Length: 513
Ligand SMILES: Nc1ncnc2c1ncn2[C@@H]1O[C@H](COP(=O)(O)OP(=O)(O)OP(=O)(O)O)[C@@H](O)[C@H]1O
Image (cartoon, rainbow, N blue to C red; front, side, top):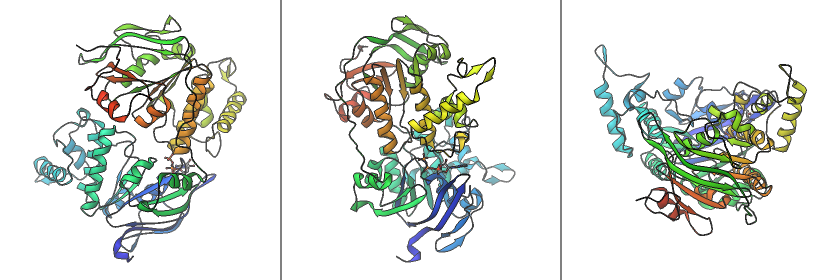
C-alpha cells in the first residue's frame, strides 16, 4: 500500500494517565474509503486514542500522519482544519436551535453584517440529499428523534469539510430501524470517498459494515484483521484474550408469587398526550420480564413511574400487594426496588465523585455508613473495595474520579451498587448499553442470578438480542400500552419487530379496539 492510500496513520502513540497506560505504543492505519472498526473491552483505550486524533489529548510519545504528512493536532479546531470530524456518543447540540443553526454554530456564513441562514440552509439541504440524510434543515433539534439528532452531528462534520469521520459507539442510542439507516448512510459516506473509524462493541455491526478491524487490549494493539477473513467468535477471543460464550446459559424460570404489579397506569405529558395509556402488567418472583419497544413508546415514563421519578395521573403500583404509587424515589428504593437507569450520567452516577462515593449513593444515610452526620469512610471504602473486586471494575483505585473512567466501568459501578442492595425487584433499563461482550455476558449472568435467587427482574432494552436471550417472558410496549405478550421460545425478531411497530398484536393486556 502506498501512502496515497492512507488517510490517517498513527505511529507508536503512547498516552499515560495516573496509574495507567491508556495507549501503549499504538500503531494504526486508516485506508482511504474504508470503514475501520476499533474493537476493545471497556477501558481498553479506544476513546483515548480517538481523543488524541481529535486533538483533545496530547500523546506523550508517537506521531500522527494525515495523507502521508506528519501533523500536530493540538486542538479540536486543528483536527477539523485537517479534515477530521468526530460524532460523539453524547451529542453536543443546542436543543432550541434549528438543525441549520446547530450545524453552522461557530462557522456562521455571513452576508454583509448578517448571518446567511438561507445560504446555509441550502448547503445543509444539499448535503442531506447527497448522503440520504432526509432531514428538515429548519426543524428545531428538540423536536426531532435521537436518530435525526445524530444525523445533525454527522452533517456538522461534513459541513466543516471532514474527510475522516470518527464515530464513537454511534448505534448505542439508536433503535433497530435507525441502526439500519445509519449503516446505509455510512456506506454512502465511504462510497463518496470519506474514511471512517467506527468504535463499537457490536460484533454484528463490524461483520456487516467494516472492512478492517483493529483490536486493542489493555492499551495495546493485538491485531488488525480484514473483516471478510474473520468471524465474531475470533474477534471476541482476540478482544478478551479467551473464548467467549455468546449464548446466555440459563435454566427454565420458576416464577412464583407476584412481586410487582402495575394496574391501569395513566401518565400524561405537558402537551396532554397519554404517554402511559392504561398500562397494566405483573412481574413474578423468579422471572425476568423483558419490555421490548421502539424508543419513545413509554419506556422512560414506565421506568420513572415504577421508580418514583415521575408521578402518574391514575392507576396503582403494588409491591408485594402494598401500594407504592407516587412514593418518593428513596422510599421506593428502600422498600426493595433497585434501578439500573438508562442514562448513567444523568441518573446513575455523580461523575465528579470517586468510585467509593458513588457506591454509597443509595445507602449513604444508612447507620452503617453514616453516624451522627459523619460518613464512616472506612466502611464506605471497605464496601467500594469489595464491589470493585466482586464486579471486576477496572479502575486505578477506589478514589478515582468516576468521570475519568471508561463508560463500561462506570456502568459496572451502578450494577454493583444496585445488586449489592439485595433488592426484591430489579429494574434494569438498557443495562448493557456501551458494554463489551465480556461485560455483557457478566451483566446477563448477574440478572439471571438475581432471578434464580427468587428476585423479580424487569429488563427494558432496545436490543432484541438481549431481550430474546435473557428474558423469560416478553411484553411489547407501543403507544404507552402493552400491546403484546410472548416468550423467547415462541417468537422471533421479525414478529417482535412487527409488534413493536404496532402492526401486530399477541396476547396483550390492553386490547385495542
Ligand atoms: N481523563 C482521564 N483521566 C484519567 N484516566 C483516564 C482518562 N480518560 C481515560 N482514562 C483511563 O484510560 C483507560 C482507557 O479508557 P478509554 O475511555 O479510552 O477506554 P475505552 O476503550 O474507550 O472504553 P469504553 O469501551 O468503556 O468506552 C481507562 O482505564 C480509563 O479509566
